Length: 139
Length: 102
Image 1 (cartoon, chains in turn blue, brown):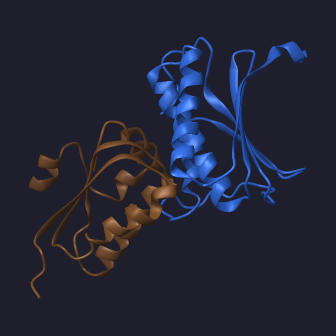
Image 2: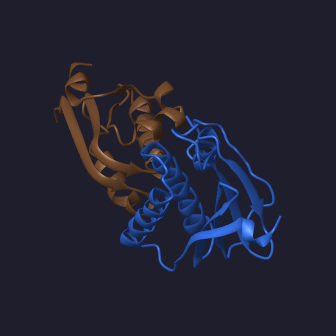
């Protein structure tokens, strides 16, 4: 893949678990998706996914948490990195369980999740829509 | 002491893992009423942390022999409930009036 095919859309760093910071990060992310002509439905799906990744990273990882949105040939990838140990493989629990629901929701929305544990804990999610899609193909 | 017959806890704005404690405390007021309604009509965003708190409420009530809490799902969070499958466990309603009528 040529480097020029990958476009950085936006990046943030979450340095504290603060309600205003979380809201602001979600709002900025929504704004960036809107700027790429995503539909309201796609923005809602993307924001749910970001929220679940942020919650996982902040609750189970270590600050700071890095958030990056990039576009590759019309496909949007959301990457969330933290300084925790990460997980080597995903564990999707019973949907009626009290934990693990966030990742199950991301999958149910039609996104693809990839986990990395080195050099830091990193989760990459390919969002379930591409440039040109409308409305979202998701649930 | 007589138990309250009906109780509604209404929420608005965004509910995420940073507001878990506050959400949890307010849900606890619904542990004992005969009918408990969680009104999420004006909630614009929520995450799975909040869903987990609703499951806790459901478990506490059902374990105590009470009816499942009724959840009024606003338009902004309907998708989250749909994809989470929570509707199979909790009675969901589109309006508060519908929830109050059961």
